[in-house]
Image (cartoon, rainbow over all chains, first blue to last red; front, side, top):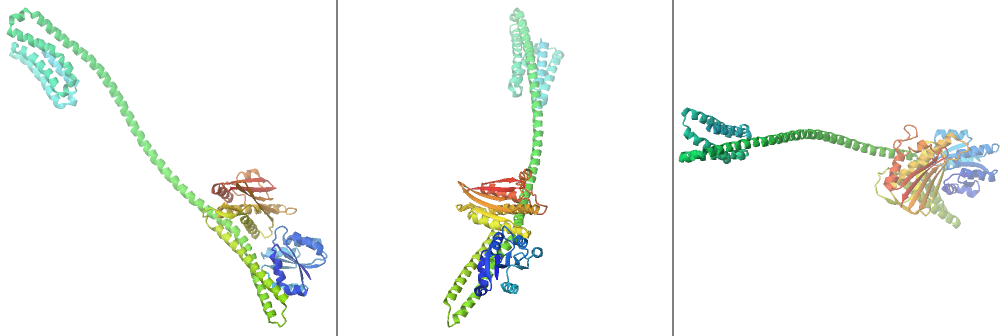
Length: 124
Length: 450
């Protein structure tokens, strides 16, 4: 399963690679990393068919996670990959907005990786 | 003949009394003078009672000479001394005539006319001198009156002067009181100003808090995550080391990861540390001491703080941050707390301006805030630019005035930019200017001498 992670913090890549070390090694998950919404869109253009799940931060400079979500839902209305939003600001308003824009899930930082792992496996 | 002498003596005594004003000035002498007058009249009366004319012929001129002598004896009579001398020729001639008549009657009778003529001229002499004296006295009197007038005038002037002095003293006291009141008011204003500066600082700190919390939360998450992962890695390493057949490649990989994670933990720990330090520095009272500061790092840090500060308040808010930092800038000698406040204030304003514009124009607008540092000969330039709402000329002219704010009541103290202006110009000897176009952009340009 190909998963695209979008976050402006570059260390997120190292973290995911280590947290999902066993799954990556076994080939269960494959992670792609982009560091902005714009980058994520161009990545989707290339890997469209491959990516089945997107994990995106909301608060990023430039295009925000919510704008990215909106864009994905508009450009790929028929084959929507699963989109999970992650944010440090877990307020209800943002939560509602994310769900309204078509997010499949809403996670708050700090991430509980055990829970995330279960959710990802469930989606599979 | 004795009648003439009597008249001369009588008028002379009266004249003396008037001339020296003895009645008011020398009461003791005045009594003597009055007595002399009575004596004169008495002598004249006795002349008729006793009818001894012969002896009186000697007494009268002697009496006149005595009066002249007295005039020269008493110091108080100095003013009449010269006048008294006019009596002398008449008295002398009369006395000489009487002595000659007494000693040589024939001789006297022979030259009778001469003596009579001498007496006459001496009397005329007295009269002329008396007239002359009167004239002089009148002149003197006029002079005296003039002097008195002047004295009166002087006295009035003096009186007015002392009245004025009293008035001046009163006014001075009033002014001093006013000055003291003003000084008190000034002290009060200074205290209020300090409170306001403090309030402004606390307000900006409040704006910062959310940003700071976010900024600290992020590195802390990494610290927690990387340390948790490292525990897992160590666990795996332990398991692997207990196996009889060890995968050395895996062990090496695990060790590399652990090392990398520890470096990450350290990196993010330091990141959180510097944010906390920055916050403490911001809330601390300015030490007033300039320090060599990495202005680029400071600019970057405050850019993030301001951004997160606004984002924490407005969840939907988003903007592009563009730091364009001159790598040749080096360290700059500034008041770090004060300059930090200026940067924070301007950046907060910039983010506010772009968020306002985004609210008005949600589509096709890319909110962006730039912070630019430039090294110029002899100075450092910091530009804070946003493509937000901009300002009309009327607002631009007032932004550095204390208490001026365009934000809704309660959202801004209106002191931020006026304090910033003071910090840059007075605190650093630099300049602060603003370039703006309504609806397009705003740029603050700080120039600091180095």
